[in-house]
Image (tube, rainbow, N blue to C red; front, side, top):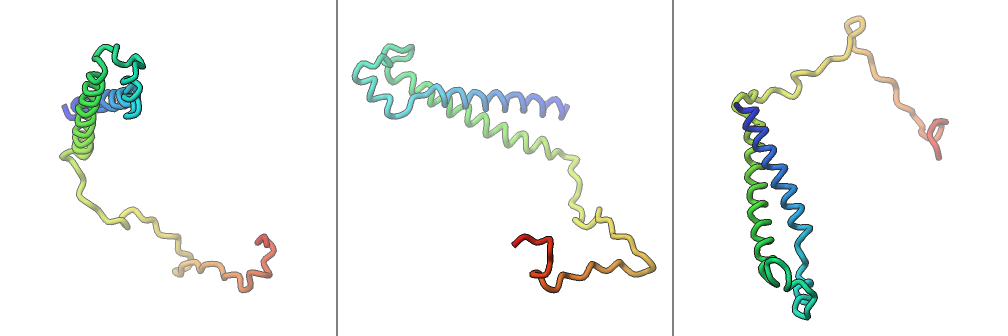
Length: 121
């Protein structure tokens, strides 16, 4: 049941995201309204000169709200009720091998960096 619900919310989330992208790309900027006042042809559109802007902006707002709600829903569903309790960060650490009861010492540092031949100058 949980996996099916996650898939359904994910499909709605992707469709809402694609819808927001498409509607934002279709909308005209604020400067496009000035061209419609001088007979640019936008007033002859399906919704009239200002009707399309109101319809598209409201639809974009609704789809953005759906996208936000599905984002929260996906994060809730991804966590789930079977969440593990927090564990230690050091729980899975593998310790280095020990030889003769003593850990292998690190190599000695280079005393003078100017004498090292493999360092470019």
